[in-house]
Amino acid sequence: MKAVILAAGEGKRLRPFTETMPKVMLPVANKPILEHVFDALKNTGINDVILVVGYKKEVIMEHFKEYNDIKITYVIQDKQLGTAHALLQAKKQIKNSSFIVIPGDNIIDQKSIIKLMNDKSKYSLLIKEHPHPSKYGVVFLEKDKLQRIVEKPPEEIGKFISTGIYKLPKTIFAEVEKQASEGIYSLSAVIQNLIDEGKIINTIQTDAWMDIVYPWDLITVNEAMIHNTPSTTAGRIEKNTVIKGKVSIGKDTKIYSGCYIVGPVIIGESCEIGPNVCIFPSTTIGNNSVVHPFSEIQNSIIMDDVHIGSNSFVTQSIIAKGTRIGNNFSSIIGGKGVEIEGEFKKLKNLGVMIGEDCTVGSHVVMDPGIIIGRKCKITSMKRIRENIPSNTEVM
Image (cartoon, one colour):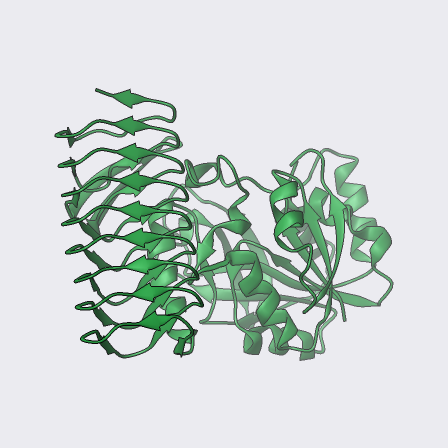
């Protein structure tokens, strides 16, 4: 059986992190989200995928150009009109009688996919009980059969949502083309039309599905996925270093004397940590990053090529690729009201989110929930209380 992975979207609500890469390439547990999808499929026995790409497709194709674990066939969605339109681009590649459709920006486990593959129904959908269903397509059931999908209802109704992960017959493309001719490009709308015509859509519940909608969701999903990474030590660890729990250290990384690391923690390749640095659970540090002495990092995502100065404190935060932070930096954790793409969210226990290639001076303090765009420059001795758009200089 083949799988069609939909990976053409941008992820506007995840800016600034998606300004230079598609959502599917954001790192979770030091791997792109899409690679976690590949891992789950590979473990089910599926080794042939059709990958629908569009926004910043070159980033995906470059990263996976030497990837051999799964055969990847690329098809391009030039305009991101909708999920059904994206699926339609894969029509010529599907020869089997049935196939799996899966979003490339979700986390799912192999057991759930196997249940879907083994289901005897012609049409099947993975669903999940969710505390905030109005963000998604809410599904209404009768004896596990899908009766109705309501996309992002204005109020909290129902309790189950569609994960967007289907097993479908090849004949679905005729229905997709019919709906597209009427200007309908949503896969959930196509499925609802099939229900209205009397088709039976079976549903299978999963607890293993996770979605990343907003920047802070990366921290939550990273915290969950990091537990699946085995402990490995490929770097050099000096004496008087304490390592507890599940910790993975990449090759050519140096952990200097006096460091205290409590897992789960993942540190990539060619990093320099310490001396006397504390790294606490659910932290990932990408490749070629440096954390200078007497700094502390907790439950954060530090991407590739990041430098964090001495005596800094980073918690519940995301620092994107190429950013350089001076000494005595502090991210304050706390509650925050955040507005993204016209949506207002009240959040707790949030640090800061800093985009790519920023420069932050020494003795800078950032309030909870602050979002800094990419290529920003913040001079020393500043207290940042408001979001800063990309390409901004704070003097």
